Image (cartoon, rainbow, N blue to C red; front, side):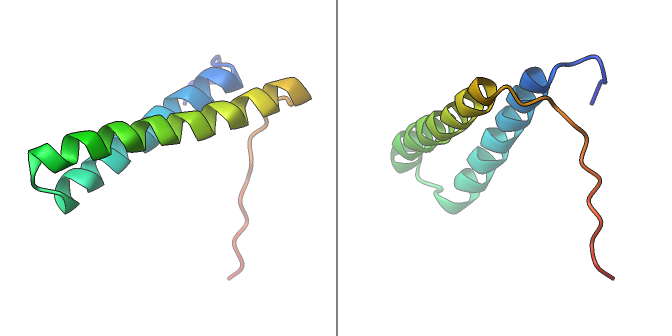
Length: 74
């Protein structure tokens, strides 16, 4: 991810990627287009509502973006 992007832009891109991956999984699980389209719409709306609410809370808290270095136990 480019360092010159603010955390909000990075967050938005990652949420878009998350939604895209969920939609791909859904297509594999629900082959019937008539069923899949309404489910896609509902899932997309739900994911974006939750993540937009989280983003608003983070912005209102004034958090700065920082890079996490995850150290997993061996």
